[in-house]
Image 1 (cartoon, one colour):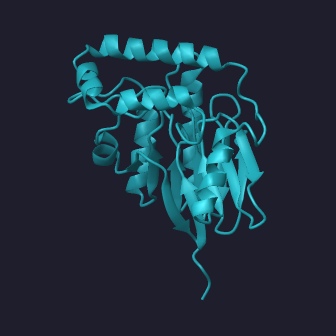
Image 2: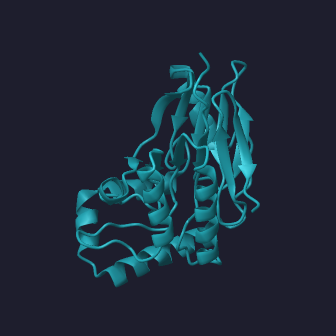
Length: 251
């Protein structure tokens, strides 16, 4: 008996709504078009975080924008294709809206999962490994219940303004850093090496770095893959049940 065809798609770091990113509406429409195209043969879709440049769910309100994207995700889930959404450091404050309204599966930490007999570790990638100290510090703040409570009581216009100002400064500060630093300096590569001492993985797939990376980790064929970003390079990943390929959307 032949196996059911597997086609799993991965995308990360759209940063929809970022003031430091030009043509947000165009990028949203491009991403929605990509989702519509891949749904034709997708068995699952994994969105690896920072899809939104900022997201906070107030008790009775959600941030403005992204309605086309949210509608398309809901449509895809309703058609029977599972969508997994990983909370990134920019869209970490997810409190149930995506599960309840869109039907997606939300992950707040990296997961271990077997897909078509291949062992994966999948996550956004922030705060992993020996470095990334700033994001580790911010993660402590974002996970703090008191900080969440206090932010919720800010008027959304004020809270979202503060968030986007922080994001803009963070983006400006990191300009020019989106280059591969070499295995000995890449903290996600080092994280993968440490994890492989504990357990074998065929593919360790992350976002966050804004670089499309495919690096061999050992002689057993384990690979560290970073999906890249969707605001200038439009890269994505495809797993066909056997191999993993990084591609660029050019439509």
